[in-house]
Length: 242
Image 1 (cartoon, helix red, strand yellow):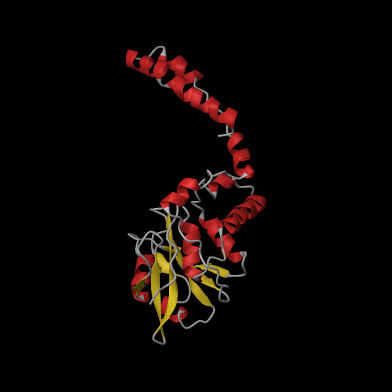
Image 2: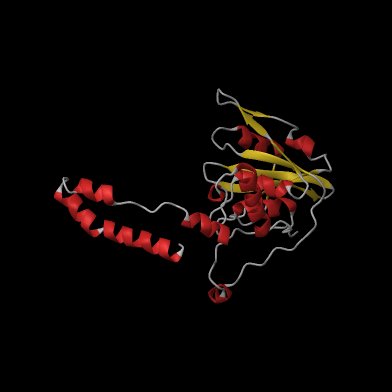
């Protein structure tokens, strides 16, 4: 039996977790960028806090992208002041009986990685599968083990329970072969991203250079050789938009 699986590309594990949970590539990179725009418009927060060059989206961006398609998203675990973690909703085994239940997005803060849990109908019975886009594919997992890892301080999986209608199926884009990658055009970041990048303050090395005049000779040597190179790189970035 072949199960839906999207393998990870660059730092886009947040997007792949969404696609692997829904078993559809309906939500794509454009939806993730739109989610970042919505967050920026509503909160004024810097877009670079929610998206990097290669993806690496924030939890807020992942949740916003899912909600934009009409789904409800709720946190599955709440942390208390004493560090104890409590499940704060329907237990996973009960959720399997809910026709609106689509799966669980899991954020792993210590590794800055996203995975998911999703229900699969096997021989007439629903089971949970854990899907990590960096692995070889979906693996079956018991609801008890999944909940234990969410509540354990060692694993600290942060679960986000998703409910709604079945997502329209869209086939994922196949991974490019090496020869195809070589022919692809280079990545061009969005204009909004570059506008924020250009607005970053230039690095000022003058104070550092002044301080090293009275420091040890090896520091003066470092300043004379390395700092000019860094200054040149900074200027080049500002002049080229990078």
